[in-house]
Length: 472
Image (cartoon, one colour):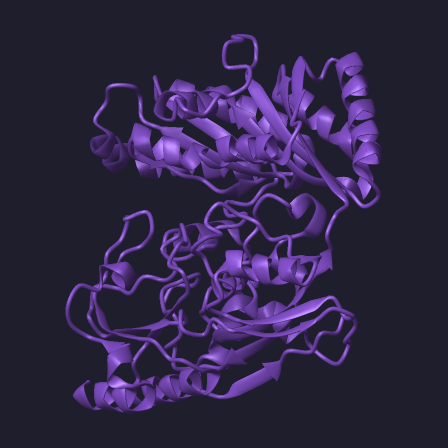
C-alpha cells in the first residue's frame, strides 16, 4: 500500500492525500450510524487527476469510495473498517464551467455545493429548482449519484430529470465526456441514466450539465390544516386542477412531527398547534409565471374550493417572502427536532399517492399493536408519493436499547406494508449500505440479475464502492 500512497501523492500532491490524523469527517456517516477506517482520503483537483487516481487504485486492486458532501442517509459513502479503501473526495472539483442562457443549461463540477449551483443559476437570472434540507453542504455529484428528490419534485422531477449530460470516470480510469446539453439524443443506450442513482458503484461522476428554468414571476406559500390523510390527497388533486404546473411543492406533516418542532424549537411558531382536531398539516407552494396578482387569485380559488369540499379546516397564506421562508423552515426543522427527541428509526418510502391514506391507516395500527407506545413521525413529499415514515421510541424508554431490540422488526413491518400497497422501500435516499438486504428481498430476481450483469460489465474488478447497492 505504500507504493500506492506514493503514487497518489505524486498525482494530486502530498497535501491532498490524508492518511493520518483525525479523518472523522470522511470516515463517519452523517447520521453517525457507521464509522469506518480509510487507507487514505484523496482529494483530486481535476477530472484528469480523478482518472489517474482511479487507474492507480485499479492497478493496485484497491477499492474506491466516492464521496461528495457526506450528507447521505443510507451509509453509501463511508469506508468499511478494513483500512484498505481509498475515500475519493470530490470536494475540490467545485467549479462552474459554463452557463448557456439560450440553451437554459448550467455545467458544473461534481463537488459544487447545491446551494452554490442554485446561486450560479440565480446570478444568470434563472432557476435551478433542486432543493433539499442539506443544500448548504451536499454536492451536485452526490445528488446525482443518489438521484436526490427534495421539495419541488412535484413540478420539476428528481435530479435525474434535471440532468442533460454527465462527465464520468470509469472504473478503469477512462473519461466519458457526455456533457452535451441536448434534450433529444437517441443515439444508443442512455448512459447518463445508468450512472444517475448508481451511488458510485459504476463510476465517478465528475461534472454535469443541468437544466435551468425561468425564474417565476411570483411565488406564494400556504399552510393548511386538514382533517385526515384522505383530505390531504383530495387537496392535492384540487391543487393540480387549480394551479396546474404552478404547483411546485406539496408537503404533508403529521401532528406529532410538528409537536416535536414546537417542543424543541419554541422560537418557531407552528400554525394550528393549539387545535387538537388537526391531525395533519399541508405546506403547498404555487409559482406563477405571470404575476403575483394572478398567482394569488388562483391560490384563493383553490382554498375556497378546498373549504367547500371540507378537505381544509383552516389555512394561512404567507404575506411576504420572509413568512414563506418561515413556514418552510418549520417543515425543514422536523428532522432536527426528531434528532433532539432522541434516536429514531428512519424510513424513506414511496407509495402510489392514491394508496397513501390506506397505507398510513394500516401501518399506524400495525405498529401500535405490535409495539405499544411507539410514536410515528410521519411527514414528507405527498405531492410525489414520498413519505419519511419515521418511528420514535416510546416516551421514557431507552432509545439505544429500543433500536437494538426493535429496529429490524420495525423495518420488517414497515417494508412489508410498503410492498403490500405497491410501494418502494427507498424513494430518494438510496440503498447505500443500509438496505442491501432489502433490495435483494423486494426486487424480483430478473431485476437483480440485470443489475449484477451491469455491475460486472462496467466494474469487473468490483472496486467501485463495493457492498453498496449490491452485495459484494
